[in-house]
Picture 1 (cartoon, rainbow, N blue to C red):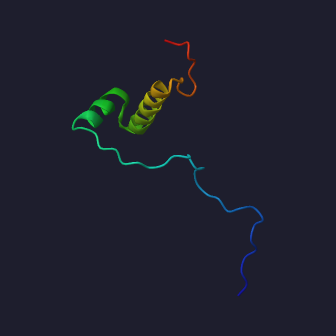
Picture 2: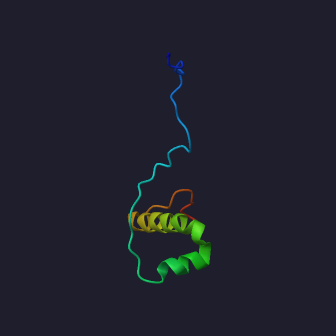
Picture 3: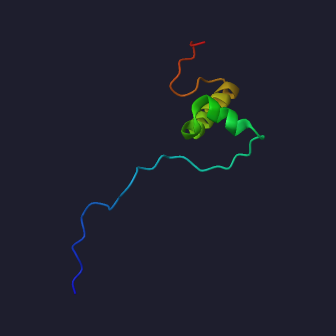
Length: 72
């Protein structure tokens, strides 16, 4: 039995990498529910990522990605 010919392109299936690292974060009771009530359960991770990036930028003294420093 012969093997099928291999493609010259790299075999990649599915979604492209998101360049993120999974991280377990423990939040006080009720916080996840408050976030879900504000943005919806499917947007929880995005909300937390945005909040962390804003907090880091605030502490670094830089504007978060995609925002102008002059914006209030």
